[in-house]
Image (cartoon, rainbow, N blue to C red; front, side, top):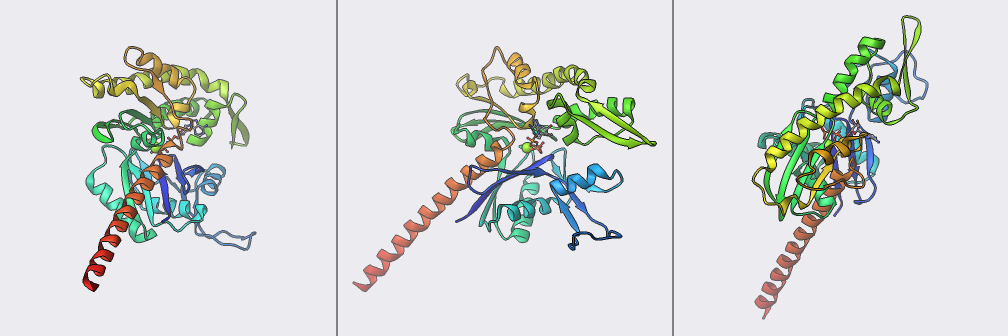
Length: 328
Ligand SMILES: Nc1ncnc2c1ncn2[C@@H]1O[C@H](COP(=O)(O)OP(=O)(O)OP(=O)(O)O)[C@@H](O)[C@H]1O
Ligand SMILES: [Mg+2]
């Protein structure tokens, strides 16, 4: 039975059909308008992922949809992301294992499952987001803090049982919104999160726009100072909320304390967390924090699918013995 691990994030959609390779694309949908000329012989009404991002970064006035915001599905176009992921993986899955923020409501989970079932014809398993990373790392007792673009999700597990969790509406977007204000004031241009990520992580990167007949550019060194300053208070906010969640827990649980999500990859973040949790525990980061949830959902789905198969086998055997007995 084929299954897929699918992590539709606010910034990136991550998907895997084998638990090893992960396909990543920006969670963006652009509904295209009729163009004056068609140069490729193909006409499309919906653009998803990289193609949508390219349109968005080249034309300022196009309406690009990011279907997730502050941990909520705010637009039905998120289903386009799910469909596109399955399409580029070239699979027809029976089961899709996915995640939602820890503090999502039961109604949100049910709606997600129902719409994926009707639009993709799949059975859906929904996990609280950070569980994916813990499953990927083979950890059944521990803590995981997932810093995504739109939310930071945290969870405490004991022997694969949910003990505690929280969702903060402070993700990388908080950092980027603040940096963006400076860029807008200094250069008068608006940048996408993808451009800001490159500006922060790549010393040689620069972004440009044409404005009032001139080239306006923003370079790494022009924003990095701001980033450094904001980083400290950002990590402090997240760390103090996490400490609140950890209050009263047994020390054996914090022996596995994991930091994941794209936030864990931003420069200086791991070090700031190590400082903040120096007195509590060592911080572990998975080898691929952006893909770890999707990979873990796949692992969890594999285990469940196996279990179902086993149960089916047992049922089959029971039926067969019944039949035999009858014949006798
Ligand atoms: N090398 C990198 N490539 C891409 N993004 C990176 C990299 N390093 C850090 N990032 C950050 O990771 C972020 C995406 O992280 P992630 O995929 O975990 O978020 P998300 O799952 O889309 O959001 P959420 O979980 O809040 O819905 C980007 O916004 C970017 O700032
Ligand atoms: Mg995420």
